[in-house]
Amino acid sequence: MISFRQAAPGDAAALGALHVTSWRETYAGILPDHVLDGLSVEARSAMWTEILNDPPAFGGAAVFVAESGGEIVGFGSCSGQRDEALKEKGFAGEIGAIYVLRSHQRAGAGSSLMSLLAQKLLAQGRSSASLWVLRENAGARAFYERLGGALVGERNEEQAGAMLCEIAYGWGEVSRLVRR
Image 1 (tube, rainbow, N blue to C red):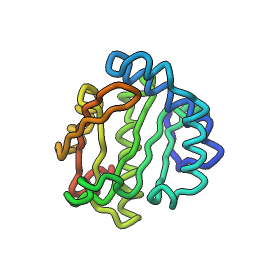
Image 2 (image 1 turned 120 degrees about the horizontal axis):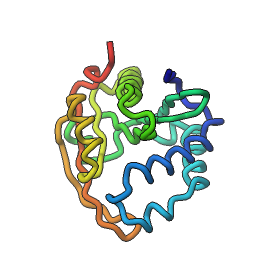
Image 3 (image 1 turned 180 degrees about the vertical axis):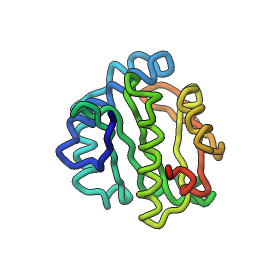
Image 4 (image 1 turned 90 degrees about the horizontal axis):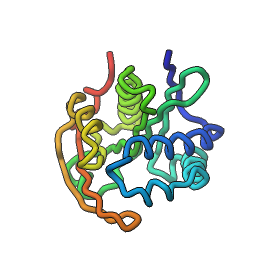
């Protein structure tokens, strides 16, 4: 059984560890090995500590976790839109991250997290949202398309010496992500 709740500052270390593990699971064969090998649980934990301790400094960020057996097995975060081009296209909110450990995928955790993020964005007065995903991440792209996401942008970005192509998905009405 998977349960969900809003993350608290005390979750930062677990979020940092899950973030690194999920990147290594998700991006193996997509990102260069040196990028994945260079990930730091400590750095990710520090990042989540900052976000969870001061959400307004991060665009009103909200983070939700999925738990199973007392362990965090997934998380999602949302905030105000950070990308100017997507903001100009009318996407007021952003889903900054959503990751579920492979062992817990296809059990509804991702859809439930997306619903919680959508509810939070709506409560913040943000009725539309977008997210970025690596073009080569076929599984995630299929997931967003099943949830009604439309392609709304593309960008190339260099990260740790690797050129990445990202695709933006958008929901003009984020309320469609809220599970009934």
